[in-house]
Image: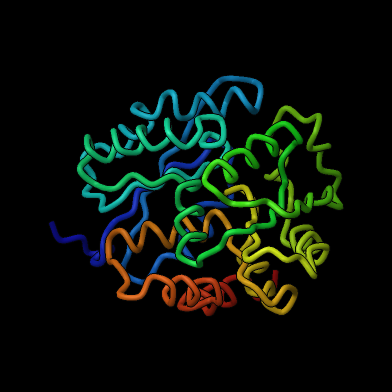
Length: 265
C-alpha cells in the first residue's frame, strides 16, 4: 500500500491518556517520511499504579484502536506498566501481540534496555520524576536485566507548584519541564555510570538531550528517544546500530526540526 504522507513507513504509538509529551517528541524524532498514528491507553482507575497495571491488562483493546492501518511497528509509550509486569511477563506480552498483529510491538522499557545494550552499558544512573514506590519498581526492572543502578537523581518540583510526587494521585511527570530535568542532570556530574537514563515518557527531554553531553560527557538516553529509535530501526534497520543510536542522541536529523519549532520556548 502506498502512503502519500508516510512513504518510509507508519508507526503506531500508544500513549497514556493524559500524556502530552510523547506525540510532540515522536513527531520531531522520527525520520522524514515516517508517519505517526497515536492511540490512547485509557483506564478509569483513580490511582496511578492501578492505571499503569490496567494499561497492559487491556492492551488488546487499546491496540484495536489502530484497526487495519498498515503499521510497520507499534510502540507502547509507557514505562511504568513494564515495571509492574516484569521482564518475563512483558516479553510474553510483546511476543503475543507481535505475532497477532504481524509487526513488532515494542515497549518503551524494552527499547531503553536495547539501547543500553547497544551502548554496552553495565552501570546506569537514573533521573526520576516518579514517586518513591514506582521508583523502587523501576530499579527492580533494570537490575533484573543485569544493569547496576549507581545513582538516582529526583527531578525537583516545578516552579509553578507541581504536586508532591510522593502524594499526588496523578502522574507527577506531566507538570515537569526541561529546566527541572537539566537541574537533575547537573547533580549527576561525576557519576561513574556508563549511561544516564531519563525516566518517564511524559518527561520533556529533547532539550535536555541536546545539552546533556556538555553537562555529563557521557550518553544520556530518554524513554521517548529509545522508543522512537527502536521503532524506526524496526522498520529500517541501521547497518551500524551503535553509530545510529549515538547520532540520534546527539540530535542527528531531529535537532534542526526541534530548534525551528521551539527555539523561542
